[in-house]
Length: 193
Image (cartoon, rainbow, N blue to C red; front, side, top):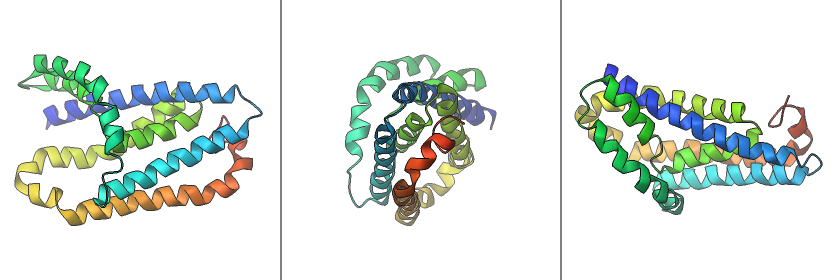
């Protein structure tokens, strides 16, 4: 259990770092104080990414595979560093391994990074990815501990379809809210409070 927890805390730390970078990048959009359409376009793009992710998770299409392939250049540089921590014998090896594995290309993480871009600050971007990472913690801890026993259930088509539909609904909900979001962007929904 401590090994799985240390590994996942490392992974979540990398997510928060990536979120901070995206939030900082998104803060550049705030410099364009009177260019609300830029932020609205980013919001719509982030929700389109969620819709694409939902469809991808259902297995209907491999539409998001391009995004994961796009992250391969970074992973090719990070992956060799993981060898120094393998085999994992304790939390002291698991945490840095998790830090490195947090950079593994993943369409789900990319969709949340798109949302972090909209936060407009490094702190809020980090918080967005931290919340995402903590939200994945129970499932990934359970998967890590019980994967051997319940591998078929975790990888089953029904679970993948349900997960994809949930993400798809969130993306569609975000797109529906885009119609009324414009006036709220500067009042604390996405931009600074």
